[in-house]
Image 1: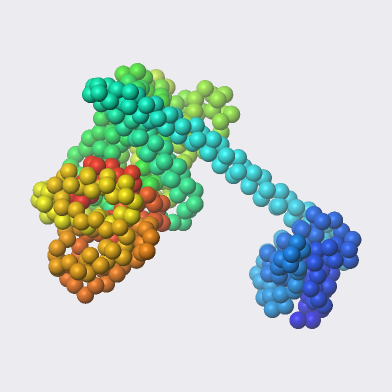
Image 2 (image 1 turned 120 degrees about the vertical axis):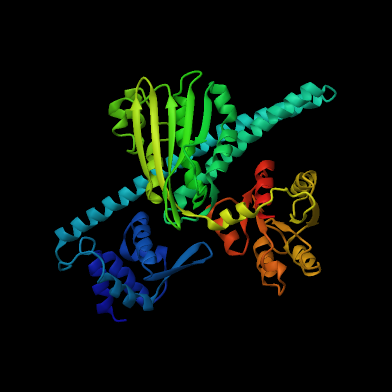
Length: 497
């Protein structure tokens, strides 16, 4: 690579100092102090130049004690030349290098772009800090309740009624914690996975029951009654969708419906199957809330990004912002419509088309609903306390449980078992010696008839979309999250056994 090609590259980038730096490094390696001395520039300016050069792959850097040593990456210069041909002329200076006004204009544009990036990063940082502060506050409330109830339970250990009251309140606080954790995980998943859309088996009626359970205490406290029912016959309740998106949409809508419902008000949710084909089904879901509706001027801009200042001026706020609902619906090609009246309330109508989960339909038709009593379940869990809890739940439901402390032990147990000995495997994911993913792949690859069809259910605190996808890709049938919900766990097991 000769000096003329180097000059050509950095004339296009529009800075003579960077050309000089590259020429210097073509001769020998230099540290930051040597470059500063030769160019007579400030440290911030040098840092700016070196970042551009290292990000572009033109130079390399390494640490030598307390000093940073820079060297030229000769092979990268020719590659950069090819890339420059595809870059917009608005970024690269196309006029002769000697035209200083054009160079200055480009530098101004570049600095403006840097400023925009910095401002966006600052907004992102502030948003994250605000979220963490709110989450910290919200988490401490149920934790404080649990600690207080533990203290009271110990003081009233001989009073069954007082002890039962303490346990009931601890259960409520635990549900609050789980809900907050789900919210944090969901928001992180939505934020980090714009192009990532994993589908999971999903039953709209189970979702309605889960929603009733999730909002039971909040509804009771607000004095609001929730009613869910189907509008006509739903032929295809088993669908494939992104559960995180669906759940988050309902949480936002429900939180606002409860917030603006009148005392002794009602929230009515109806499910209706509008149409279906051999592979897809279109569902309509209506959420009708009584009480305070939206002003017309607010309803017209309800899907715009949330503006706290504007909302406070109007005296109305959409809480977490219905614009998030619209964004999530857009990702799954759904529709939303709002009818509102300030005095009677709001009707939100969602319309979504899903792929039909035919496998789940077949399992539902063939199930005898006898439960898991008498079934043999291999329980793979490395945490002693989690193992004890899961074993109690399964044994209490009548199952015969065989424990394994890690994936390797589980593989050995299956290998040495009689064909068809186990009805189901509950598999933790993150374990020492061998994790659940690897264990599942080995079990599935065994040359036996039963190991290819035995239901293997992931059981993990890892609940991100990519974690669920990884579980399914490794050969597991379904993914359930910790902490274990007894009703949900037994429903999933009964579905597959």
